[in-house]
Amino acid sequence: MDELRWWPVVGLAFGTALGFAGAFGGVGAFLIVLVLGVVGLLTGRAIMGDLDLRELIGGRRHS
Image (cartoon, rainbow, N blue to C red; front, side, top):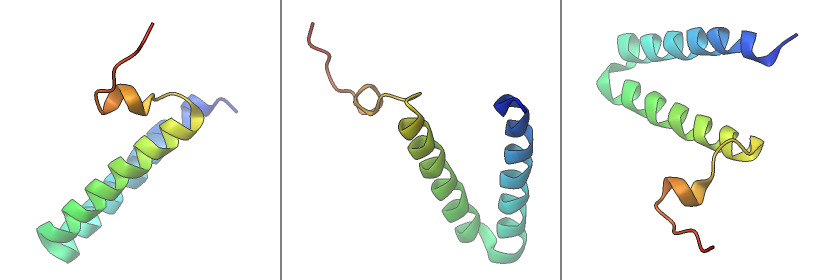
Protein backbone atom coordinates (compact mmCIF):
# COMPACT_ATOMS: atom_id res chain seq x y z
CA MET A 1 0.00 0.00 0.00
CA ASP A 2 1.20 3.48 -0.80
CA GLU A 3 2.58 5.36 2.20
CA LEU A 4 0.77 8.58 1.27
CA ARG A 5 -2.60 6.97 1.94
CA TRP A 6 -1.77 6.68 5.64
CA TRP A 7 -1.29 10.43 6.24
CA PRO A 8 -5.02 11.23 6.52
CA VAL A 9 -5.33 8.47 9.15
CA VAL A 10 -2.33 9.85 11.04
CA GLY A 11 -3.86 13.34 10.88
CA LEU A 12 -7.17 12.00 12.16
CA ALA A 13 -5.47 10.22 15.06
CA PHE A 14 -3.47 13.31 15.97
CA GLY A 15 -6.56 15.52 15.79
CA THR A 16 -8.48 13.09 17.97
CA ALA A 17 -5.66 13.04 20.53
CA LEU A 18 -5.61 16.85 20.59
CA GLY A 19 -9.39 16.92 21.01
CA PHE A 20 -9.34 14.50 23.95
CA ALA A 21 -6.42 16.35 25.54
CA GLY A 22 -8.24 19.66 25.22
CA ALA A 23 -11.57 18.30 26.40
CA PHE A 24 -10.36 16.34 29.42
CA GLY A 25 -7.00 17.86 30.29
CA GLY A 26 -7.50 21.52 29.52
CA VAL A 27 -5.31 23.93 27.64
CA GLY A 28 -2.06 22.73 29.24
CA ALA A 29 -2.57 19.13 28.12
CA PHE A 30 -3.61 20.34 24.66
CA LEU A 31 -0.38 22.32 24.28
CA ILE A 32 1.78 19.44 25.55
CA VAL A 33 0.23 17.03 23.02
CA LEU A 34 0.59 19.61 20.26
CA VAL A 35 4.27 20.32 21.00
CA LEU A 36 5.17 16.64 21.37
CA GLY A 37 3.35 15.86 18.13
CA VAL A 38 5.34 18.50 16.25
CA VAL A 39 8.60 17.23 17.79
CA GLY A 40 7.67 13.69 16.74
CA LEU A 41 6.86 14.85 13.21
CA LEU A 42 10.16 16.70 12.84
CA THR A 43 12.10 13.76 14.28
CA GLY A 44 10.42 11.32 11.92
CA ARG A 45 11.09 13.54 8.90
CA ALA A 46 14.74 13.97 9.94
CA ILE A 47 15.18 10.20 10.30
CA MET A 48 13.59 9.58 6.90
CA GLY A 49 15.90 12.18 5.35
CA ASP A 50 13.10 14.55 4.32
CA LEU A 51 14.26 17.32 6.63
CA ASP A 52 17.65 18.96 6.96
CA LEU A 53 17.96 20.08 10.57
CA ARG A 54 20.78 22.50 9.73
CA GLU A 55 18.42 24.28 7.35
CA LEU A 56 15.68 24.35 9.99
CA ILE A 57 17.82 25.97 12.70
CA GLY A 58 19.46 28.42 10.30
CA GLY A 59 22.81 26.77 9.66
CA ARG A 60 24.92 28.03 6.78
CA ARG A 61 25.89 25.93 3.81
CA HIS A 62 29.46 26.08 2.63
CA SER A 63 30.03 25.51 -1.10
